Length: 330
Image 1 (tube, rainbow, N blue to C red):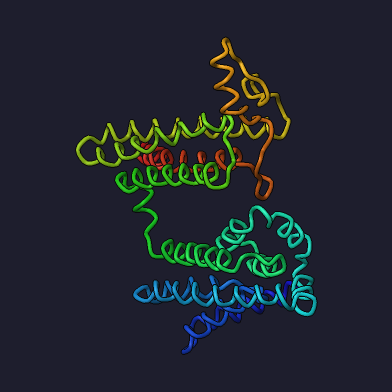
Image 2: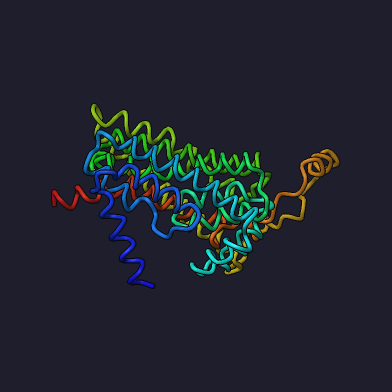
């Protein structure tokens, strides 16, 4: 099996140099969404690097063909699962993943498709599962378009951009940190107001770092030219803030896994009131969620776990270039 996969990868790479490479890219993108094991990134990357003037058209081809292929996967799951879908899942030993996907689809189908479309989780599992559970077609199509566009345009952008400029130029780095913090807050607010996951007290505390990082990142970016010392201090502050928030997220995740007890204020089922007005207000608002219960997990991680990783990544983005340059000059 390993040798077969290796030959398929090599074959796909060779197609990138073919006279009809664009058509081959479209074909691989199409069939990968329903049954083919090799992702189109194997072709997309060398094609972008070979001709950057056509990079965005290659990303568009991948996105369009992959979404069309996802529709085929949906049809297989909806109408041909017993005849085609089951053998495909068996060939990739994906039955367990398929069962987990279908179990979560009632509440998280839209997000499962988006995450599968972006990540390297086999997208075909999500497309077939969407058909099996009869996911609403418009929602499925929107999720596929959004996820695949993020995936292929993101890969293309990463290949087009000189990462050293973004990592070591304070202006761009500060803007990235501000936008990243804004994006994370947008996601958690979407979970709260669109999906209905109410935050616990520890969750609310973890948002503070991102509130602080948005203006601080802009300060670090805008002061880089005229006041580089202020910019450096801002990046150091951002590094410390995100490291602390990462540790706080790990602490919260540990509470959710039962490794240690949480604070008394996170019990989730008690009110502290001193008069009748506070009692009425508390009853109207309802009890805050317990910090020890994770209402949502993906790949074993709760939102606290993902906050730990995201904060650690932003801490590295803010602090690594400073540390790297200090070592260069020492």
